[in-house]
Image (cartoon, rainbow, N blue to C red; front, side):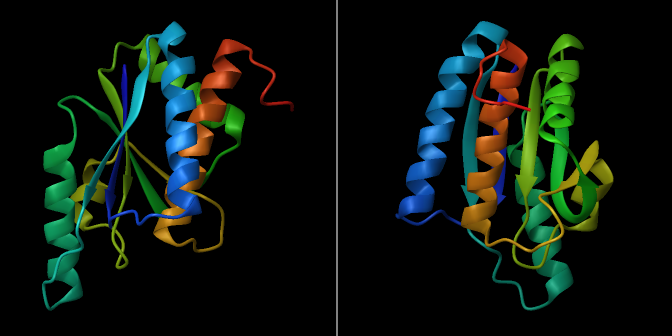
Length: 160
């Protein structure tokens, strides 16, 4: 099963980008034993539309078009559920066991997600009650994907 992170906003060079690459590499290597690949990262430039609604709509259309067919869509959203690392890993495992071709984690632009994307999302999650810059949210998400894989493989990285 393919893991994908689709994000509005380009990651700039810096320590956050280095950590994303590190966890991305670790997840990709550790996930092979589970039949997981990725997370692949697809990113888009923010829309330049004048209105917030139009920006969100354009960004949602771009994100949805980039997702693999049949993907289980997880939207990162401030109103989403707060999950433990164990519950997060169980969602990935359930979709893998169900034969889902991909799980796509979607990070919206500064204005949030368009309604079309939220309507199509199978799950909405939050990375806590605080608001995070996109580069840190991407880093946190990539680390949690790696952590989920280590939980599923029984690796001691996650010590509950």
